[in-house]
Picture 1: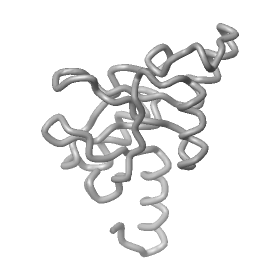
Picture 2: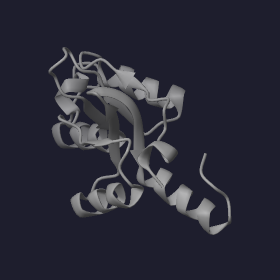
Picture 3: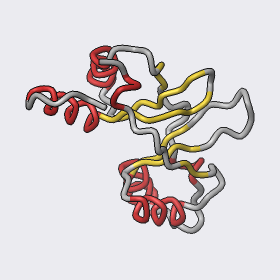
Amino acid sequence: MLVKDIMVRDVVTISPFATIRQAMRLMKQRGVKSLVVEKQHEHDAFGIITYTNILKTIVAEEGDIDLLNVYDVSAKPALIISREIEVKYAARLMVNLGIHRLLVTQSNELIGILTMNDIVGALLDLADGDKPE
């Protein structure tokens, strides 16, 4: 099974200049726990912002969600993986680095996201006799 077989293609992105309030609102509206932070130019890197990043920042710095921007809180560069890699290697990378998400790119363009939940769901489907899409 390859990353492209189970990745989520509908990735929710946000500008690095958006406020934390805007990011939280977008996460709630789209029902996601993370957002991909957009690149500012061709040679820039993608970032990622999660509920955990936001909560740590707000609690640790007693930050104002209207004064902090996404770029203040996001992890950048986000780790990326090719869509053509076997899922077992993506899972190994996540476990070894203690991360829950990898961005999937092709020719330096974002095409998807792969999460631990996606991998576990695919494994359960296989165990139940279903094939991934």
